[in-house]
Image 1 (cartoon, rainbow, N blue to C red):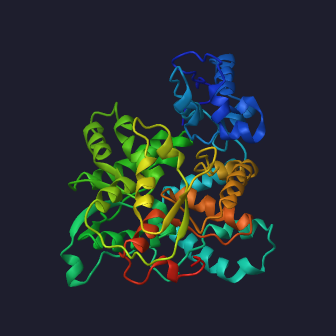
Image 2: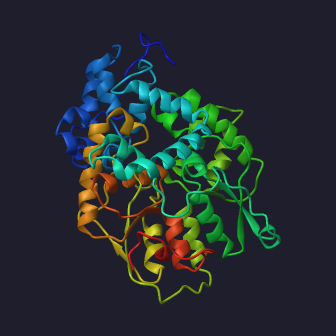
Image 3: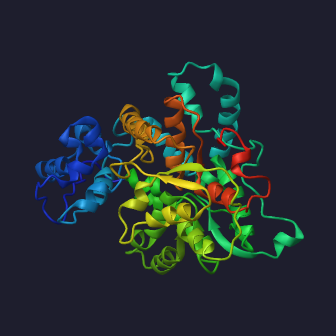
Length: 430
């Protein structure tokens, strides 16, 4: 970590025009009304501080940022405010911002992601025992909601590769599941395996894959992020073909590896190659659905709300927003629901929900209210963090609307399920 005495507060390469375009799209500003939390406010603060050492108040302001990228996507001067925030955090104290110790512990867990498997086992068993008995406004009840699952709970923490003779003959696709799918929500891997098997494809998951490094990078610890990334890059570099990524946030980080290692000659080419091979799951599945498929046309109508992960909406020259919608519109008896004012952030923001829980909940509950008004039968997305937040949102609202990964929805509607469609499992409505 940089010495705080030597750290400078970076400002955007192009001086902020103070136009205010960023304030209109900033979830934190919209929730608080405090402009100091907007990109314009941070740019002004950076200009005032210049070479001065950040203090606790400064650290708190810079920690209160989702890094959703909405501000950068509308900035007329193309200021990389998310990059500036992450660079500023490199010089902060170890436990900066609100609930700094919790964020610190979360980063350490991600350095050893297998610990998440133990958290899942404890969380799901606690949810089964306690959730119905806890008060509606209980904080523990809401925390346990993130472990809720629609389907069987007795899956191993990390699924083994298919073992039957028929499955061994499947053409293998290299797969990066991310920490959440591998340890917290292994049913995502199961759904993807069965979905792809319907198209003659299997998954190859190299042993030893590490965290993508996004949380460490965002927290201002690029050395930790690169250390995790090197493990993943080294393993993926020993494979060929596209790399399927089922989490939108992980995909965004893998796609950024070429930039992260741009100045590292020994890793630059490997990192760039992995970035170029990474394919987000909705793009991959959309291509699959162009092939011949015989979906069950007699399934009941399903009203589906798709939530756009911020990492797929912002920060890309080609945002991934049309592909999941094209998939859903192609599925039989699916009605796609949209927010009247367009997509918005769920408030999870990686470690943001730990550092600013009240603010995260305010952003979450505003989105939940708008989703509930649409009366969906199911909510779907492709980001693991968004899945956690939306599960919690429905629990906080007292609604039993299931939140599932897009792969499960596609699997059920294309007849790719080996053990029954989604509609045969409560609480999906018929």
